[in-house]
Image: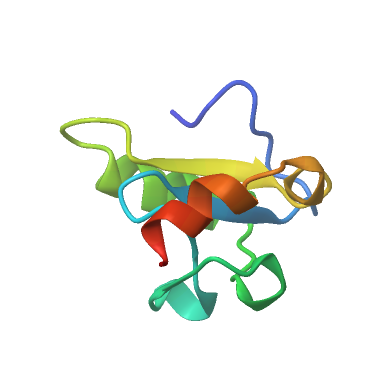
Length: 82
């Protein structure tokens, strides 16, 4: 159950959609290339969402709130959001 690298704490997670090349929006609604507009999810929510979304292949990844701003995904997103 769950992921060993994700522990239920107060840590919030962004959800990165590889399929849409964007972050999940707030309240599980839509996608955005803008981290400031992205939704933040509890560990439990992130695990639930990713387990459901990744049934056939891994397309959704939880990224800890502290780590996400350090990722340079602008070029990755730019290609999809032209």
